[in-house]
Length: 63
Image 1: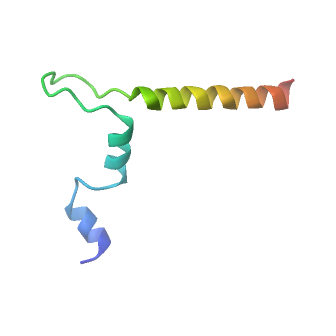
Image 2: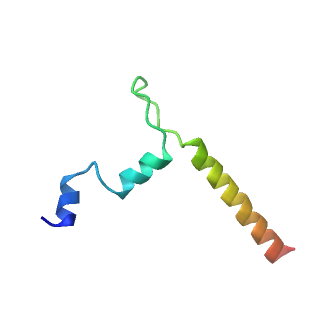
């Protein structure tokens, strides 16, 4: 059995599921209409990376 066939037969495996599990908080099973939220550590990482990139661009290109 090839790897592609094995992964195709197992929809619970894959890079998309791994990324979603790492970035999103699990859904609340008691609230059927709730959307999964981003984890706080991921949001903090995005914020720090964005501010760092903006500061780098400002001080190297515009200042």
